[in-house]
Image (cartoon, rainbow, N blue to C red; front, side, top):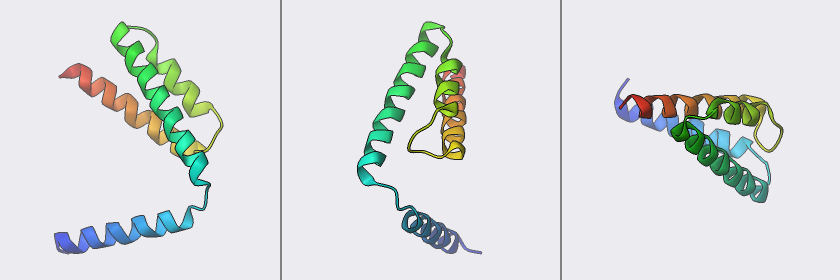
Length: 88
């Protein structure tokens, strides 16, 4: 399989996922802002040596626009990002 085929397949999969998602765009924007605030709070706590994991855990276990699976993936990915930035 060529690289172009992989890119085309990934683009098609992303388009299907976007078409299947019929959630409200206004709620999506609010959820993105909330996620931005959570990321900022977690980063500031990480840099200050405080309990940044509790912030991400509260977001992961909370309710809102994102599904629980999406919240878990987002929190885990950002935790990895913080840890890797600390190792540099």
